[in-house]
Length: 130
Image (tube, rainbow, N blue to C red; front, side, top):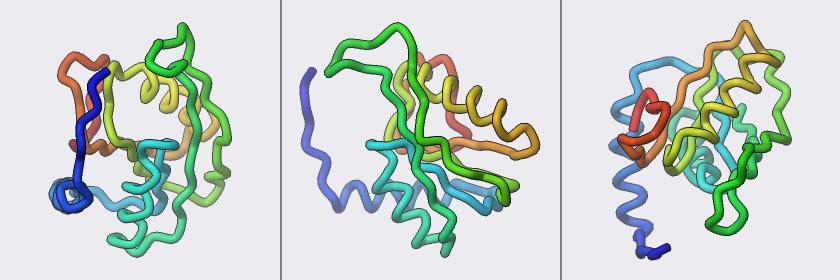
């Protein structure tokens, strides 16, 4: 897999563009560890939201895709109504599909939407904003 340098300045510019696209009021942010953590932190600051809770997944072993996605460290969303899930990329979509499945099962009364800096058109699911 080829790695490319993505400067912090470019990242900040992309975060600002993404934030400007989001036209939905949310009360909680869930960044997907690890790729969404910095985005989640910046969104928490930008939107002045303290309810920022991470969630973990394992869907790859190095660059090899695993058969199943494991979702763990699920936050307590007892007070949440509208939750924005953030990640750096929606690649195949498998991870985000599993995250949404797990969260909907545990919190059926909560509305979840997804924002991602990058999105592959071949993914099985599209983020609400990218």
